[in-house]
Amino acid sequence: MINFGRTYAAERLLKSAVFTKLFFPLFTQRAAERFPQFVVFSSDLIGQGINLYGYWEHEELEALAQWLEDHHVVGGAMLDVGANIGNHSVFLARHFDIVHAVEPSPRTFGVLLMNASLASNIQCHQIAASDRNGLAAFRLETVNVGYSRIVDAPLSGSTIQVRCWKLDDYFQELKDIRLVKIDVEGHEAQAIKGMEAILRKCSPIVVFEQHFSAFKDGKSEAIELLKENGYTEFYFVDRVPSTQGGGRTSKLWFFLCSLLMGFRLVVKKRSELEPAFYEMLIAKKAAVTSLP
Image 1 (cartoon, rainbow, N blue to C red):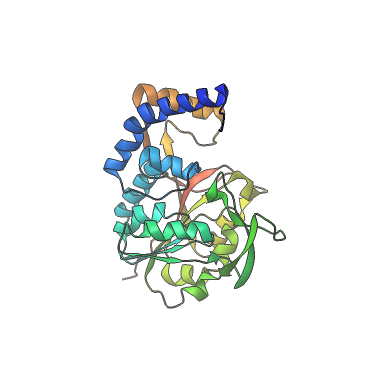
Image 2 (cartoon, rainbow, N blue to C red; image 1 turned 90 degrees about the vertical axis):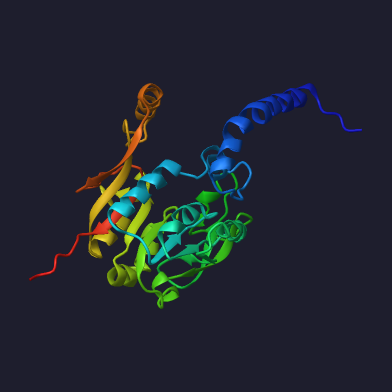
């Protein structure tokens, strides 16, 4: 006989009442009826977002999709660098002829393969994007699987070896790349260094996340590399009321205003990017006007 105490029993009953009777019918079932059914990691941050809203960063992706349509970024190829379980690949697949989803983590890659079947034009590649070809140490995270990343550390129980490639070499035969999305948890600069030929040849839109910690002396190496490769226009997706800065005060203000008036997402152009956390940055080369 196995005895479960009162604390366990009370916790189980509470969870059952909240999730089975309230949470699932109100949120999860509604999302399942409106959106693709993803395979996710249980208790993972991205999985929770998908269960609640249908997609992780659903509002930001809708704003990005509208911006891409407004700028006629359709067709051709998309590179999803740091694809995780395929959330962004599946959402954006309808805008492109083919999506190449890049993900090095073995477990995550297995889930990515299953989710890639939700669209007919996604190809998956089990590699990491970097500034060299070879092997790299890769730390696996469990609570937030999306935070798994390349590290400069010895191999251990939670650190494995993964194959890394310069994307210029790996995709050297690929033409007409229209969009590159990068989410590689601090390895953005190295990934960009490994795809500079792609940036020069195809001039794709580059979508990436940038943490406050990536800024040193007011500058981000990834942003400076993009500038060196001709990217002069930068946009970020912001909420109105704004949450830019990510502090508690701005988040509380957004919460209160949203309850009263709702909110909207806008894509704002910035001439200079001050140090901050940017959930979604868009980099674009200036339009070239042909001479008469």
